[in-house]
Image (cartoon, rainbow, N blue to C red; front, top):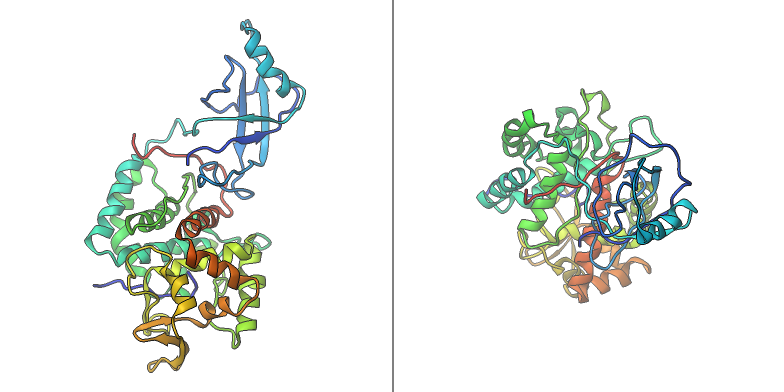
Length: 385
């Protein structure tokens, strides 16, 4: 979802997690409530997850993630009776041995937000106009894609700063104001007293946008904390540019100036570029014109199929003079075509063009990571509660 993109605003569960325990310590007050097949009576494993270093435990079926632990404590309750099985289960933890533990999602006990209702309200926004789905994805993408860990203002989705006029005024965010002020604002107001944060609402909007348009379910967790003022708006210029003058320069920009900065690899870059299977560009917003595919409100791998098979001709956007590539009424940005000109990107484009399931799996994983960059203390939610 590159900076130049402008979308029309008018018309599976838990993977096994490898846990390395410390020797037993005193009873900890920081134990988290967990449930699962490996739970041992009064013996609990406290786990505080740092999302800045990893994805959610909720992942695609084919992937497994290891948590990085900020703190892990093992507390043994007094006067408890452990049978032989429980003692054997506890021994590896006390000896510092890595063990595999299958767990159920951890929910925040104090969470009063009716997440199922929030999600339904977001779905209603999209059902009123399917073109809003790609726009909500773009909003969440641009909110998250400003992350820069080695700066004073790190950006990313954690503080929801894209809701401020100062960040919406960035050139790459042209056309996103209605998504914030007209579509999401009523939902935020409705659940504000229960604690709904803008930052969570914006990223969840992107998740629902993809799901409602036939895409994969993107693992998502809540717990972001909104910034108190626009002082924390990141500087302009961190999102991907559509053209750096040549395919080689554009690919170098994507790698070194944008995605590697956020910890993504080449496969992630191509997967995230697949967001262009949704939506379209508008010259008066992005400087480019047209949809990437013939089904801009249906999530498929069509973007990659067209990249490989369509005959793309360089053209000039009449209103702006920008260079883009057209095949009939469809278009591609220079950054899109650049993927097919790179020896490492091109094979991944081909793989996604021939296997939609693989694309969906990789896309969900990469977007989940993008939406969690720079966040801390996230927790899973139950949309069915």
